[in-house]
Image 1 (cartoon, rainbow, N blue to C red):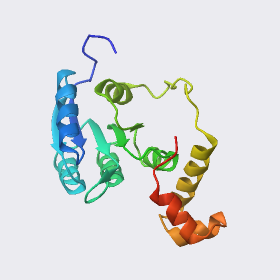
Image 2 (tube, helix red, strand yellow):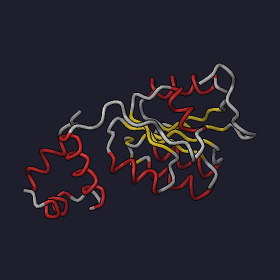
Image 3 (tube, rainbow, N blue to C red):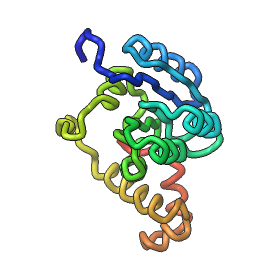
Length: 183
């Protein structure tokens, strides 16, 4: 990112939806310095209300919020404003949720902690831009965990159905899902 202001276009509105107040405020301040006009929300309900009254040109939405799933905000925004650029943030980085986010209209998906430069680059990237190959590819344990997460999402987060499809005991699957993702 250069020191010059990015070209945001005529509508500079940015909705930041995150229930982590210090992070939300810090990101909002940093994005404001980059020329965005910030509106904040701390819940799915507040985010949806903002999207319905004044759909923003840009949005940064946390995946897991106290009152639900941030993908509801993404889907609603995409429905009312097709040109919106949306980045989904999460502390629970999983390929399955990234795929789900992009399928319903997110422009990009970033794992927390993402800094303002990462967010700005993701919001303003052209669709033709390809990210560089990873410096540290996933471990075999992480690939297994990602596969389990993907099947879990495809089964609408139904543990019994996921266990059946993976030919795994339900309690074993519950233990795996309860743990943090491997590195």
